[in-house]
Length: 159
Ligand SMILES: [Zn+2]
Image (tube, rainbow, N blue to C red; front, side, top):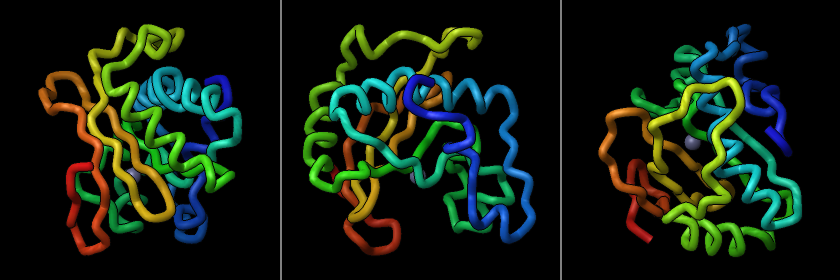
C-alpha cells in the first residue's frame, strides 16, 4: 500500500458503536493489498489528489449491521467504497476506469508477501456520492462491468 493504510480499510463508526471486532483475517489483508496495488494506488497516482476510503473490509457482523449484501466482497477484502476528496475528480476517475478495464501492465504488480492472486476486476459501481470497486475471487468467470446505481433498491444499469 503506497497511498493507503490498512486502518483506512478496517475503521468503521458502526463497528465502534456496536462493539464489533472488524479485524481482517490474513487472506482479506492480501485482498486489500491487491486492491491497492492494482487499482487504488495507481488511481491515486493518476488523479494526483487524495482518495477517501469510506468502507473496506467488513466482518460478517459489520456487513449485516450496515445492510450489506449477504455475498458482499467487502467480507473477503475484495471490495472498497471510496470517493475523491475533490469532487471534481469524479469524472477523471470514471474515465480512467473505462480506459483501464483492460488493465495496463503498470497496474498489474502484485503485493509483496501475498500469493499471486488469480483475481480480476469484477465491478465498478457509480453511486451518487461514492464508487464501489471489487475484484472477483479465484474461479469466478464474471466479466468486468461498469455499472451505475439508479437509486432504487437493487437497481443497477450498465454504463
Ligand atoms: Zn461497496
